[in-house]
Image (tube, rainbow, N blue to C red; front, side, top):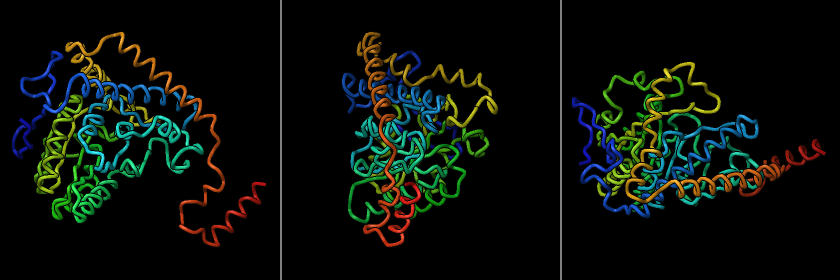
Amino acid sequence: MIRPEQPGKKPGLYRVLNDKGGIRRGAAPKDLTPDEDYVQLYRTMSLVRAIDQRMITLQRQGRISFYGAATGQEAAVIGSGYALEPEDWVVPALREGGIALLRGFSLSDYVNQLFGNDPDIQRGRQMPCHYGHRDMRYVTLSSVIANQLPHAVGIALAAKLRGESTIAVGYMGDGATSEGDFHVSMEFAARMGAPTLFFCQNNQWAISTGWECQTKASSLAVKAPGYGMDGYRVDGNDVLAVYAVTQHAVRQIRETQRPVFIEALTYRVGAHSTSDDPSRYRDESITETWKQRDPIQRFRTLLDNMGLWDDDKEEAMLADYTQRIKGEITRAEAAPPPTVESLFEDVYAEKPWHLAEQEKELREWLS
């Protein structure tokens, strides 16, 4: 049974998958079909992993400037995203790009954003990995820690005032729970009854700061009752458990119009980003232990045991992903950079005189 955390009690950790590649009795999400939903979850997590691996290589080659991978956290990303409705707003942190893909963000747009070329729908105005798409209700993230959380609360409250059933999900890492925006958002959402899901990927490292340095609380989820909301703690490397807890929380939010907090316990097995070297500040033997809990391999074992997957399907899937990703990279690299005109667009409905003057001056300088 999915239960919220209680202060003073030992932290719980909701799981669906057991240690033998099976499902705990009675824990399987009843609305998911193995031959369709389970396979789609697995394929999407695998796509995120394939993209991340390739993009890290591109950054090392100097072909893109920055990348932040979700390696080891794919279950937390895809499991939570799969439980949302299309009308719900996603306000991401750094590693939730897979949810954009899940919602229909094309691989072409995904790769264009990393290169910041002319076909990029953001016209190169954002750092790589800072995806955004209004039609998919996926808000462009900011690199400032936790400042997306007040935005999520505002979006949720606006939906409530309009009489909509929409919720907003504010994603964060464990480091965000030490920021003022986190506390303000939790307090405001609870006080105003904003239908917000606060989803924390506790990957145990806020760059070089371990999560135990963030708090003296026994868990992050146990903080929620102090703000007047339920907090749930889930195994973030168990995609079915993440889905089940997120679905439970989403239903609760829609019914009560009250916020909920989820802590998905996972681990950042790679670097914080391509600008980071984790071997300088943590014991990598612990990392090796967490690699044995790989969420993709863990779910693959279940699919194998159920007869839904095998090595031939795996090989065909990975070959397809490799070809598609390679093709999009080739196309994106060949595309031109954003035009000079784009520098002055999307600022005002009608271009004012001073921007027109600046554009003219720039053109003369470039000629």
